View (cartoon, rainbow, N blue to C red):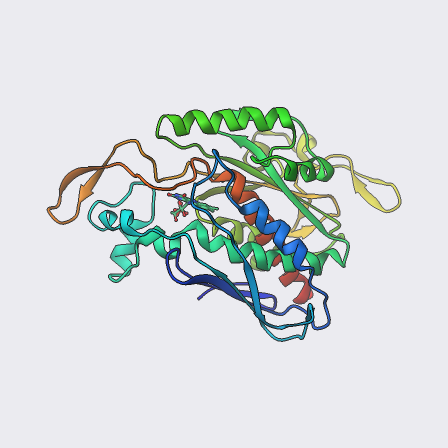
Length: 352
Ligand SMILES: Cc1cc2nc3c(=O)[nH]c(=O)nc-3n(C[C@H](O)[C@H](O)[C@H](O)COP(=O)(O)O)c2cc1C
């Protein structure tokens, strides 16, 4: 199993085309009411939308088989499973011989000689379904402490939302299939995705995540710092290629007098700007924690690409047919929220 966290610990299991995917979630306090309606709403946000998502029908019915009594946690591990129903593995077998560029096929087969390549096996975005379910429970745990998390789509391909967005604006993204903050951005991003798909291609983009309610000083330091643990978790999401907090890479070109966020008093200590993305020394500085994560274009594309034929060790070609998301970003938004919630819940239980 693949584990995230120490005290609030999620152990992930499953394969894209096995009987189910799931996780064991430990460390959620006993006596907490779990709103299963909220889990269902979060799962719905990860589901593919017609046109901009894979045609694979993912019902994602979450079963919490242990750890809940009449909707209340009993303090033991929660066993979360989601059946895989709409599976068709036949189109993947050729990738054993002609691995897809951009996907995990080549290194996976080198490392695991019996790799189940159907649907990408354990490297499939399908495994993010139980992460979203577990994250939804973690969100409910930290909401009780006044902490809220909302992510949205900042860009898709060449379409960039250039406006400042706060927590409330990010919350509006749940109304739009691309998870853009506004209807206008949603239509432009949808067009960008459909254009790429019509050419047998795919696009990437950026997810931005805003967390509010973290008290000043929350979070570990050094190798347990809040930003380093969140970065590790976000980088673990398939197709993530970059994470930056606040101004991120852009801050390197600023002067200290511009980049520092000056403090002032307003019912406590506040900062006038948020170039640091709410993190100083690995801990919250009381400002909203803001980070962005870059997702690459979906690797499985219908356009023909160069690859190798591993049987003959000659150069070859591959074109991927089947059911793939032309853009991962809209579905990754809820996964980013989920891993952020799991890390914060874990740091909270660790007393950091
Ligand atoms: C929600 C989600 C859905 C995904 N859907 C697809 C897909 O339909 N086709 C595909 O080739 N990759 C998809 N991916 C990405 C692959 O899983 C990922 O690129 C692959 O495992 C290689 O890992 P890496 O990109 O992190 O190196 C998806 C990822 C996520 C998070």
